[in-house]
Amino acid sequence: MADVSLRLLVLKTHDIASVVEFYQSLGLTFAEERHGQGPLHYSAPLGDGVFEIYPLSDNQTVDANTRLGFAIADPDAFVELADSVGGCVVKAGRDTPWGYVALVTDPDGRTVELYRA
Image (cartoon, rainbow, N blue to C red; front, side, top):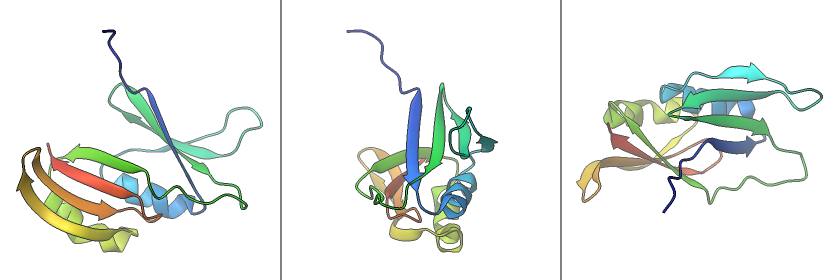
């Protein structure tokens, strides 16, 4: 089987500022980008790939079914500040067969799993 790795992940939103703030609070560092005549968006390195946040056109709806997972140093600390950065706590951190994990939602309602790194 060939090696496969994720190189690009794009989220689209109607509220770029809130979504960028939420994911920056996880530890990602975003930069503004625009390619040619394309829309202004935000990009952050993530492992060997890139995590981007793009504007969603007015006639489209957010895909809140997308589920993401990040390994961070202190999931419990993020749970404490999730509400202040537009998120919502779903489940406090706990030990699971996959490691210590907490569940929050981002400002658009996407579930975000936070694993202890």
